[in-house]
Image (cartoon, rainbow, N blue to C red; front, side, top):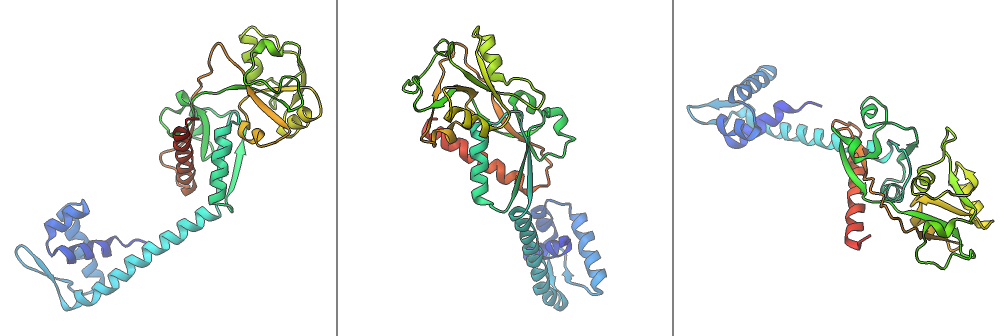
Length: 296
């Protein structure tokens, strides 16, 4: 609903001066005059009495004033209703290379606010460059890849963790070193192409040859393995907070000689028309502010 003419009319009626009204509307005086003349022509009557420096409403202008206000109010209410409808029952598509605690918790916060929204997660490896032409609304990528996109920082550093049953002999440790795990049965994830995840590669690059006993491509299987065997899962804080809420398992950070400082962001296009993008970005910002306040 285009109410530009009515908005211009209302501002001119308020200011009673073309110069001031045009300045407030951030348009030229010529553009304002053209719009008002067009509105008068459409209505078939003069709305303003034009004097040298000021204008005043005609009888017809005074009558039209109340209708113009109603039209603008209805248009604003309509936009709000449509916006709320798109938010409350819309769909948000997010791509990610790897899941992490921050993304999972941000989605959890978002879901509490918008329980009827569908959040669809796609694990396809989409680069920042390819994202611009994809159907995704947002994507979790490294900060370096997010050039030209708006984004919210959602992960500053990552921690390599050992996840195990509370009954495991190492479960009482506050922190572990890679060499503490040399004789352990280790669990790693594999992607859809059958490649081992980056936790495995980090171990190899650090000079530690892990004993791979189990592979999984679904987090449920990983938990089943941990709970029913002596195996230890190696992972970069994937679902760490979720796992720590399960009494039967513990998550222990591994002391790394070389820190992992990949800064992940939740990126989105500046011209995105999906209102849910802004809401998810707001949840991400609030979550990261909370982590900063708590020092985590």
